[in-house]
Length: 447
Ligand code: VGL
Ligand code: ZN
Image (tube, rainbow, N blue to C red; front, top):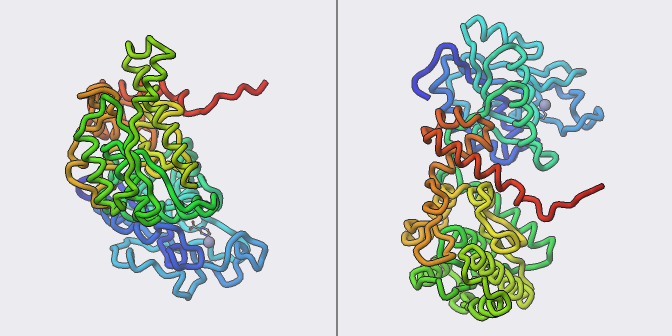
């Protein structure tokens, strides 16, 4: 986005103290949106802030049977714009929902905002702010209904999530209604990932608490995914609580064993928490029972992944631990995993991070440079690299997947938006669609 476009307006929805952490209705991450909003503002000729502006006896408050605690009451500090955006230059600050007996989430309802924007020659609206599943949603749907070409900036919004998934569902609904989704940054960098890892830490504690377990076991390959999952767990639970196991086969090169050890050391694991278990006896036994196994790289690779799974689960049983998985979003969407092998786990800490983002997370977690720099490999056979096998680079795949799967773009729009070759985008899409069946484990057949 370059230079302000007079036909474009940015609507900054309800970035108020009460909707930010510490406020009456604080939204996780609401205080972190300002940099993205400021960047979006650079491309907009008009910038509008909306504010929830309730009277003290508003119908949406619990005292009157509504769903919310008192919030954004006019004249209170909670109703003020959050300090992170208070310095932005707004052409208009639009108060809304001031009628005590009427709840409205939309910045357009009864405010004259549509006429104001049209009067300034605005045809295109960008939307960010709070909250994705309430006022952003309603304001975006109203902007679409008013005839504005409407884009919701998914990295400049945050959701209340009364029910988990509400944010995603609201975005899908806005897109289905004719809105477009976009992001300031297609892939998240270190600065964006640091607070995400902090939030994941809270979730990990919750899961461990519910299961009544304090430890995790993880298979360490020497690659970046298991390094990041392990380092995140070590930082969150304490390094003594993480048992890492290297699971070499006769195909495993020494460099990966060394890199795994370097990762564990960087994460502060005591040496006694780094184990090594060869899977050769297991795979040899299987090859004895199934003599044609050795003739097929794919069969031997899958058998190896499943042998590792058995060892990891046995260690978890022995130590009263949960199994920590290592799958990233790129591998997940591309089906680049073995069902009941590397895909088997109790907890998946990085399954929402694209490969490129896992690398950024590794920097947040101070993982060694050798691990950051190496070519990703499933290590199924010597010299193998994932990118050769997939036929495109992870960076291109990540950009194409974000554009198509997170933002709902067509392959043509995705190629245009990301700069990735249309032929590569189409191949990524074809692969993701062909392997979508792998995500359901197992397929039940209700009659
Ligand atoms: C909002 C809940 C209640 C919002 C306003 O701004 O999204 N959410 N009032
Ligand atoms: Zn409200």
